[in-house]
Length: 263
Image 1 (cartoon, helix red, strand yellow):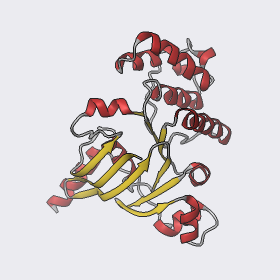
Image 2 (cartoon, helix red, strand yellow; image 1 turned 60 degrees about the horizontal axis):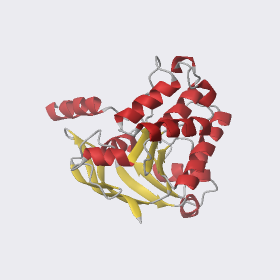
Image 3 (cartoon, one colour; image 1 turned 45 degrees about the vertical axis):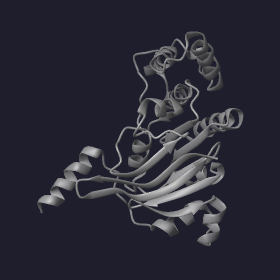
């Protein structure tokens, strides 16, 4: 059963095409890696899937819901951990969780029990009353993951969740995520530049480059296809070794489109 269906998805900013007619599916309970070089269209795709951007063309179905037609219902179906930190530094860990639960209208008794359960899972219960500004990068990431799971989502979107973290912290974070995937059957949709993570964790991989999907398969299938002994080598064989620019923001894309239009 597919929990995510993306059909002919396109996003244009002026004359610039950031995502170009992509289609793919994700099965319920799958650990799905969405990989690509900088500027490939990964973050733009996630923004469309999580209602932050409207597609120019195409259709998205999340847990049977079209986000373009019912944003509120779609948002209840997923949690998201953004690439950039998003927890309130002047709030405690518990206050961050409580605020999120109220925002998603999680009933008080369910909310309190779920907060305790999740903070214990990510080993932050003993720090629940500490201000987030005192937390390390790894602790903040763990809090963001716990917060994203508070409203019992069916899908967890993770946009480079372990960026800048040391190997030990990355390993712990993935242990928490995989345990939740196993116990609660939450579908994991993640991006990463650490190819070793995707090779070890993902059950399915889609590689996007210059806005188009260039390969789909399991890590072993992509390695076999490119005669590579690692997913990183397969990735480079499929996308090339040229250094890419960072993916621009929607405002940058619009500015780029205007510049191209006025040339």
